[in-house]
Amino acid sequence: MGGTDLRERIAELVSEATAGEVAAADVLAGGSMVALGVDSLGLLRLVDAIELEYGVEVELNGPGRPLDTLDDLVALVGAARAGGAATGSAEVGGQLS
Image (tube, rainbow, N blue to C red; front, side):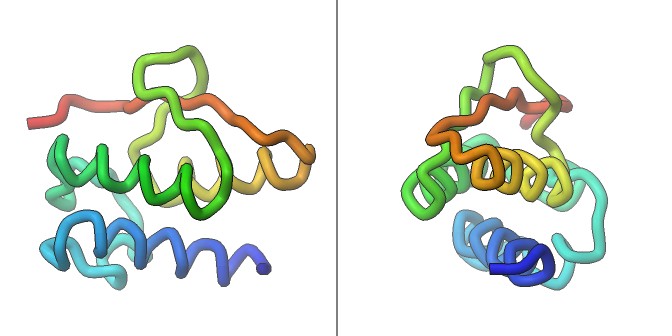
């Protein structure tokens, strides 16, 4: 799966995690997921989906780079896959409502 395919799939996962309230096209356009309307429940669903689909462990309060944009998610998954690692680490940037 190339970078573009990975971006599109993760954008779809964001949309699915929010029950369609946040469109994949909006996620692909960029910006903060919090600003787009991803709430705490949607974020938890998204983390579960990423962990299941890509085998990447996402730690919401762990050390690491912020996890608030599509690019952050793509970098996390891409780094874990490229390094052959089974886990990655990330923390959520921004205040969730």
